[in-house]
Length: 130
Picture 1 (cartoon, rainbow, N blue to C red):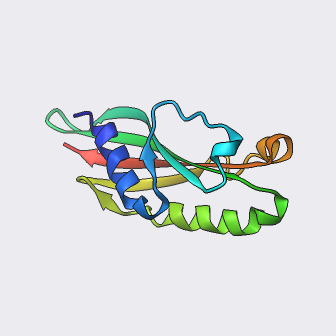
Picture 2 (cartoon, one colour; picture 1 turned 180 degrees about the vertical axis):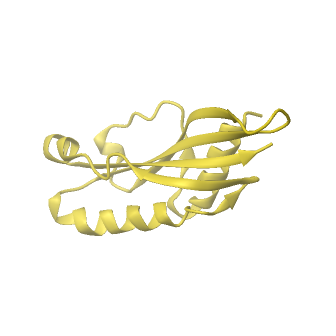
């Protein structure tokens, strides 16, 4: 199995209380977002040489948070997303360590204004040394 897919599945399992699922094409209708949807998407794999005999793999996954919402809900949703993201920093999953947590975007003003939808994306980078 692909290492980045394995990490995505383990991240989704860590977020089981939010019913997180691994999704390859995350597209949803607003009517499907009354409850928070949490999706995990395998994003990228990068290899770096450490020596002739060793390399590191940087595995990146994105976690998307989608929910029908309005500006009044923003502080609560931002606290939730930031807390969940930071919970992964330095965490070891499937033999890899989370070395970076980035929020991009922490929320989308366009989605909130135009669709009434809270959209936030966390990008996690895991390091695996072989």
